[in-house]
Length: 457
Image (cartoon, rainbow, N blue to C red; front, side, top):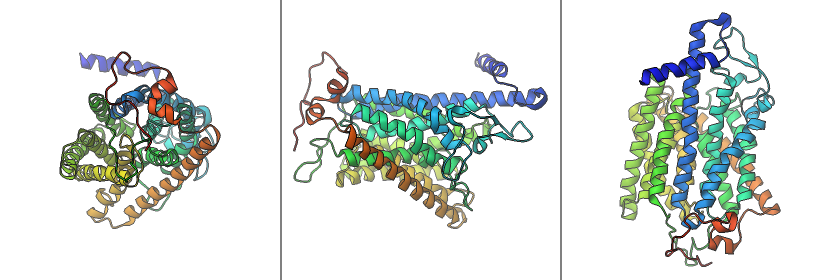
């Protein structure tokens, strides 16, 4: 039955996909069809990660803010779709300078791939290496861009104005994210270094970009009321639904099998399989490492740490997944699981409020995963006798991304603060953003428990 369905899908694509091959070569057309089918299916999996982020963030926040969290995670994809189509994709992949693309806005311009043509003609040279249609390239890259914006949602949760988040998300996906993406994936200066910067599926390009942008937002917003007490202690604010958070994490784990293997952007059976295994091993190692470290550090195997440890392993392996062995993936995952626990404790110690641990997962382990290429890559990694050249390139890339994304994000957040404001009122925050921002309750008819109001301390 499955073979019949798969054959039907391939035949459908053969009809729908234009004849990119010269002289109507059936073999080349079939290759384009199969590659396109794989890229689109992987993109659909990454799109479904929006549901994972929505469930995870809603579960780790309080019930009075659940509607707000869900609304942000839903609308961010709509905002990202328009922002990336209008300008973002052109800045990221359009031909231009080493800093940014200057062509291909609104998908204008040809994209005739050398994979099926003798000579390339078009305005998207940097992504011409894959022979799938332009719209397939756009959709797959769009779901990545939207992921970066979704990460910000968790960092600024429970106190940001809905309209401010929408406007920031548009700027992030239209300008900030694509500039970094151009540097690494669009033919920019990082990819042109003597030892090119490497980031196969986006530990830095996607995850740390979301982390740096979220960090800037958290600093401008300040912590939630009552999170840090006058005596310097940290007041835990537990999530309201760990079942929802667990479901969200499982959805994200599934979506990562589109995120990383899909970045081949071709139906390369060997690469897809090995990347999927590396991705899974790192997630498993991160899960177990975070469980053990949390047990030792805070006395209990905290479920939120278990979930974030899994995500930390996934984020860390995203950059090196195509360049390391299965054993290397396990080591990367183990380190990520350790890092995420201590990163959560660190951010609390410096009073940077991150309700869902997104900075610890996406920023800290996005940076680590990117550096891991310079250490664990079988081709040029330090631990494989490659010296420090590749590691230095990775450090330069991490620093460049951090400075650019954090700096531009800080400017945007401050501009929003000085104009429309970025934080809801104290009364609205105490009552909950669901009623204040959206006029509805996530759980109507349920009797409130201990959550009542949070005093301003």
